[in-house]
Length: 623
Image 1 (tube, one colour):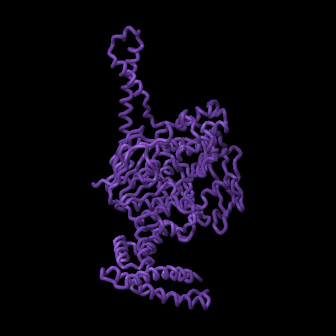
Image 2: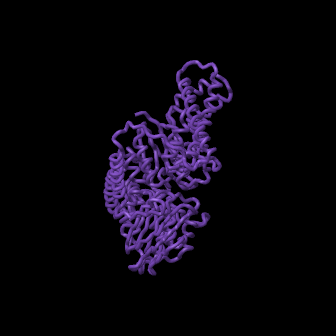
Image 3: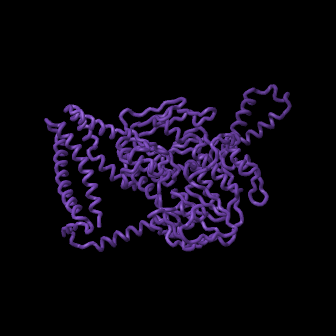
């Protein structure tokens, strides 16, 4: 396999904090690599260094000279005033540079420059780039091509970034948390696309199903060491478990030897004065090795209980809610049971977050009531994150909430003791909040929610930015949680692990209650789709040679609009035929004397077709 990328001795630190030290690994053609490491170890920084966005303290990043690379950052950056199309067409990709060079050549009128630019356009397959871009954006549920980027949500901007990267046909794609802020349907689309494509990947993601189904190699950074696993996520879990087990066994031997050496070191100085110095040095080496901790339970979250909750939780009675023309709930009724664990899924914008805010009284319903039990104490983890002062230290932010944290009936913790359960060492607790990584901020947010000992947890996208180890521990805690829970999440593995049933927000106020986890729902939905397809096939007339009847003009068109519609149809047919003739001429390879004039006409035709087809669609929708 050809080497695409080589990382050698890469080191990065911020002040006295070392993110990673002497990292070395390679990426070969065909590799689909998932990069796994704990929060705060610099996964995003590592990808940014590889992509050339940041500089390392030491080390080298070497790409093969002829490969094309694309990157989708965790938070894509756009000109906020650019439209969706402009953000894609004016991006820093090879395809866009080729299109720009062609347009400049046409403007110059120089035949040689135009011929060269056309050859590059042909080799790149860039003549229909606009059409392919629009088609891809539609598949990603981006329908308004002229919307300013500043009006798009984080998930929509991530989809635009994915589209412009994919369309550049890169040999190597670098993805930093590609599934964050995407709804499940888009995640599964991206998952399927990357599985099918012959493309090399290097990505950081906490989505374990995504890792398992897309990756063929896992690289783990653990305690400053690099470990490579030639397989998917499931293979990695098994092999990593074997490695940890072997390390733990070795650690037990080291500790046993250390006990014997400690007895020797405790003897009188005279007893060891004549002993070899190497044995004393060996003792201190053993002592250092014995400090290693290979335990996977870094967060002792089992001790964090919930408060008592009565039999009455909440009852929704005839609740309705709209945002403008968008229906969130329409006469919704439900009685929530004690110890119920509910997952909520649906398209972005379907009203999932609004639903849980209405339950807590943060958003008012248009009509209907929420009858909440008197013993219910909500703990709300919002996807908007914590609202602490970024200039405060972690320990100070928690101390402001409570100096004495009581868990259960008699367990008391200081803020410092409590934070250690959430992977914040004494040194980490002195960090300023603005220096925390995304995962560290999530852990701090979670700590502040659980320290209040809620009996009804409401978690809105709790998995964003958490590392895989922390996710596993959180899942174990939630499975044992002695209270009620509602979870909104796009993490399919997370939902499968903890929920009893699902609310599926289908849009237009429709909420389907499905009895099972996400995988159960996905299987059911797949079977329903097959049934519907078979029914459609059965209802299709047997004679498929019958020509479809010509569509009549929309009934509510004005006379002027009908005449315009008829004229547009003829103009589009004429322009399309002329464009096809020019396509054939450009692809023939023959010398074209008036190349500048024909290229300018081709550009003009393309623009005219876009405008006229858009107007034709507007008129065709009138009824």
